[in-house]
Picture 1: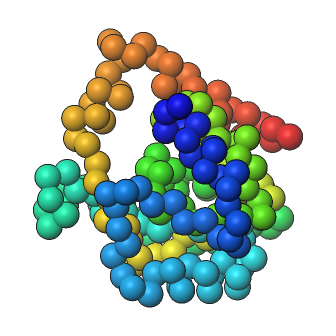
Picture 2: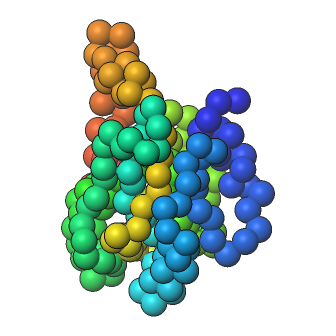
Length: 178
C-alpha cells in the first residue's frame, strides 16, 4: 500500500498516550531523550514535539547533514501566536522520524497519500489544536539516501507535482483552513 498509507493504517492501531515516529534504520542519540520530550510536552501542554536530526548515508559514524533548528527550546502555542504556521514551517517535517505526537490528537485520515508531504496535514492539525515544542540538543540519527534527494527534486522527471503539492498544503494552512 506504500509508505504513507502504511503509516495511516499503523496510526489506527495506536493505543498508547504518545507516538514517536522512528524509521527502522534510525535511532535516538541520547538515552534521556524520551523523558525530556515527555516532560516538555506535559509542561507546555502541546500536541507534538520534534527534535533535531543527524543524517548519515554510508555509515552513522560519518554524518553527511545536520538539522539543528535551535539550541533553545521553542514552544509554538496557537492561542498565543497568530503566526504559528509560519514559524512551524522552520521545523523539520520532511523526515518522518523524530516526531512525537500526543495520540489523543491523531486523526489517521490526516496522513495523505503524497510521499513527500504525507505528515503535513496531521502535523498542522495538531499544531492548530495544541501547539508544538522543539527540543534542542536531542537528536535522532537518521539514514538518508543521497541518491533519493536529487531524484525527488528533479523537475525534469517529476514535473512540478511535489512543489505544487507542498504549496497547496501551505496555502490551505496559512489561510486558516478549517
